[in-house]
Image 1 (cartoon, rainbow, N blue to C red):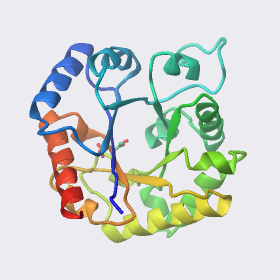
Image 2 (spheres, helix red, strand yellow):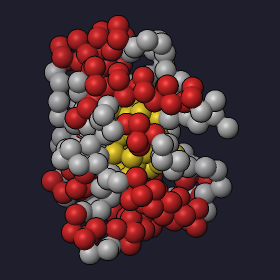
Image 3 (cartoon, protein in one colour):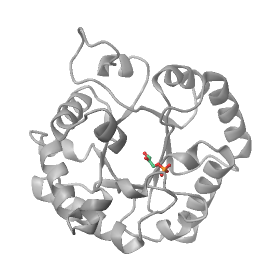
Length: 256
Ligand code: 13P
């Protein structure tokens, strides 16, 4: 069966509106053809709205980097699901480790956000991953199980297949040190098993994130368990990002 990849650019707190426009123009010029992979851009909130105009009529998706679980109200600085959907946004990253570590996100808030995204018709990109200490203490799989079981509490089995999962080992984010293929394979299998045991019937998509670059993408593409990538630093550089997409497309063609 033809494998489909999902490639998500997480721009974090980078790029102004002008820089985004330059990126999109260069992106369209450099890409050799429309990719079969699903490419989703997750710029900061302000740019998100403008990117929606820039990418109008394109096959690329747009995602936010966060949302609030309440419908509306006195939550200064927050963005609601309805604001996203009414602006044409289809995806939302939830529970990124930077939000967990720097902004007090917990499995409980991840859970509320995942439920809100699903009930609003947004596709959650739910991030989980272990710290270096967890890995050194052989706790990786337990941590992943815990994050999944708590983050997915009360999510209907029929909705689990609508979630995109992202395995991002925290020690591999922005460090240039990606996880080894065996580590990724093991983590992704665990994620698949846990979500299956909760009740999902269809195949779920699990992305890998953490120092994905054009120089290591080929090794990562060879890991059967990987359905795509959540890319930080390398998605900010248009040539680097396009190279990752080109190599992915080449890999898909080779396999068919
Ligand atoms: P880097 O690709 O910069 O390591 O970031 C990964 C990430 O956090 C994507 O969400």
